Length: 91
Image (cartoon, rainbow, N blue to C red; front, side, top):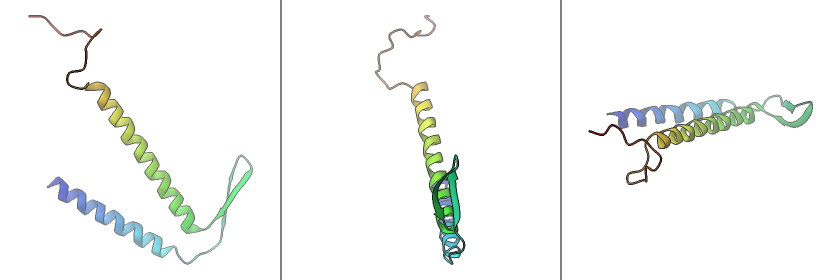
């Protein structure tokens, strides 16, 4: 059931992004992008949208890597040496 829900959410997201890109193909004015008073580029609405999409994907990838690292730290591999770790209560 969760797999079907995930696939439905993925399909809806892809459809939304495709419609948003198709709606921004008309061009329009260019927007100047500058950082610390240095001109970097002049981007149109579609380029700005795609840049935001790429930054959001990079952010999500970073969160996934952090979550995976935290889970890996909490649950060591099976058979890993436990030197220096408290083995738990001894009965």
